[in-house]
Image 1: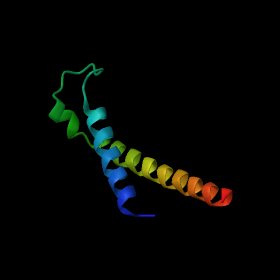
Image 2: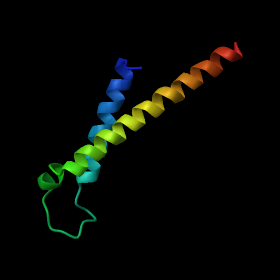
Image 3: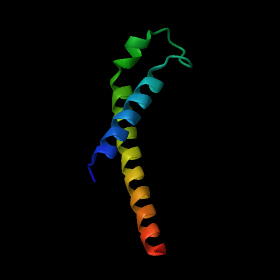
Amino acid sequence: MLNRNTLVLFIALSIGLWLGASLPLFSDTETTFTAELLKINNIIGALIGGAVGSIASYYFNKRKNKSDSDAN
């Protein structure tokens, strides 16, 4: 399950979710982007989101490959 593509997807999703969650666009508090980046809930959320996305991608790809082999 842990191949290069899954690892790259995990890292990309984690970084994207971490940066996206850290943007203080809709926040009521006046904080800096760096302060939002260092919040532990943004870091944990990004890691969980990356893991869920990678696992889902792996199983969808596995299901697609199975249906392709069944069609042949």
